[in-house]
Length: 467
Image 1 (cartoon, one colour):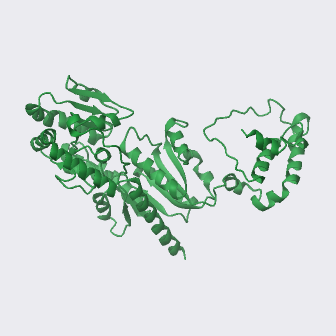
Image 2 (image 1 turned 30 degrees about the horizontal axis):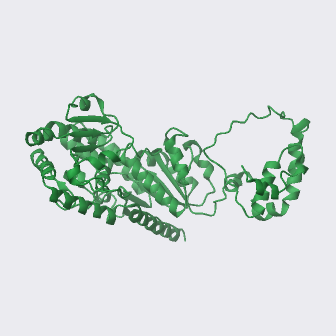
Image 3 (image 1 turned 30 degrees about the vertical axis):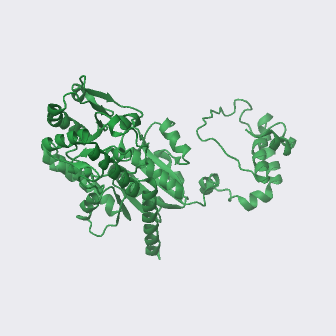
């Protein structure tokens, strides 16, 4: 697509290329010669049947003009080609295709394409990618995920390039200023190979959460997790941290857990990241309780079942008709069986904002886990008061009865919910303080600076170590 006036200034396609071949490339060079840019749409999908129209014999018929016109093109644009283009070589293919090659390049590996409307880990990764894209060119390599999905298209719209895991080695030659590995399984699969291809790139291991710590806590609750399971995960995580130049931990607790085994490891705290939302309705116009969480994540499933069985009956002794709304993918029969006239089990909801705007209290009754809990930060970013546990509040720097209400026993948890339902002044105080805490500590602007500073520091150290 080209504007008509610009096409006419170029006098259309150059007739020297008749009957065809190279006229399209020539028009692009002409556009650039006039000071304009040439852009392409990466989400377009083109199917080309090689040779169907003109055959494949470069010496006969229409196809021979591919060779003839190549020489004409080179002669016309020789000066530009010699001054602005790389030497023709297979080693230069990636660099030649990338007009952003002089930018900083961040290479990010994760399990899958982020699905931010389905889990807090994805939302955190999306914000990390956004932050990196503000600093330099960001290339995201997912180990799985549907290519061409709307989730991938959203990354493209942000200027984030995606590359299939089978093709990342074709990026050799890029000036990678940091290679980032999110989650232990990803680091275990790819970190060593990436270090070979990009030996000078600083390596960042993004824990997401300390998986072995989460399993240790789960084991203490029900004993279904074996010592062998914990040790296997711990070995992978500690080895990934050992091979890295920097570890991103979501919470100070996770960083401390890793430093028990690697005291000298450098860490930076990169928690969940939350954009501020409108604060929704006033306390008087809100009602009910809300829980949001992906039920495939065991801490969420355990937490809501514990709430349904141990906490909710105590609340309904005082507030018999209070409504509870449960949202999240992977609900399953056990949770769904609790649905009744006052308990709505909605499952996956694409847009949860209306629910956050209408609820009176957000509950996060988590009994084990690690990292930080995105659901808590997300509620706070709307000014929705939260009742949670010590585990649910961990890593966010929250103070009981200031930013949230923190209770681990079912009876006191139930009483805290009832207090927020009954007391408008308490509700307003918690709403104001939690919203202020997000502004000061968890917004993209705050964490983006932390990300940039940590990468810059590790890059400087890496460069010094090579001298």
